[in-house]
Amino acid sequence: MKNRIAIVAIAATVALTGLAYVSNLAGATSPRVTSPPCAAASLVAKRGPANGTAGTIYYDLRLTNKGAAGCSLHVAVSAQPVVGPAHTPVGPSSRKIALAGRGGIVTLASHRGVANALYGVVEAGNYGATQCGARNADGVVLTLGAHRYYFALPTQQVCAKLASTTIAGFAPGP
Image (tube, rainbow, N blue to C red; front, side):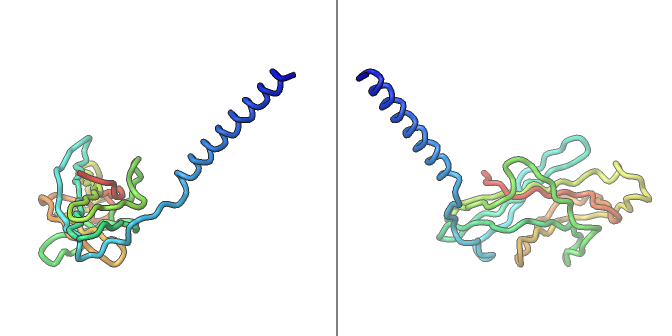
């Protein structure tokens, strides 16, 4: 009888320990405390390296927090190819694409925190001339809520009649 009671006590202890462990895991996914939204004045826009693949050139568009406090990017990003010093829009806004690990809230450390969005330019020649209506673009304007950031890019053709550019949300960056 003592052995049976000991086994029941051990089983109960194991079950409660497992329950506590699962409870801690659940707490890890509960709403997290984030830094306040980044102020436009504390962010510096800079283009990182470009990479080409299968008819698309991807640009790393970086925002660096130069502020004295950490902050978060809370809003969805949109991108518009542009041309000239007035940043005149060329064609439709970029299509949003989902990539693992991108999007959602990204927190930037003070004085040096970096987040990057991935901007893709599909080669205009991949589309028919009448379908595309190719025009030159030499930059992109990223919009985060009410804030806009300009990134200079090498002059390249984008479609004026359809979205031939893509944007993937922010991820913590180098």
